Length: 101
Image (tube, rainbow, N blue to C red; front, side):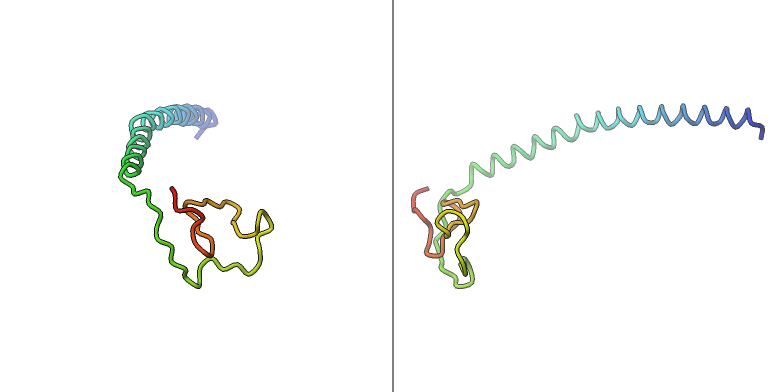
């Protein structure tokens, strides 16, 4: 093969790969609008509907001996509450803080 033929092949190969990259971006853009956004919308609607039917009652506290063990106090606050404590969801060793939700 001559050097001119190799140069022509390189030019054509570079042009073909550049065209393929443009088509790939267009394909992903179409897939984003056709599949991804509707998929996220369906998931959001599903989560909203499940939230509407969810019971908001606090579960009964059962003082299991292997849960909520405090061998030393936490270094913040009163030492009994975890760093991201939620009084409606996280019980203390002696039970929930309040019965109101």
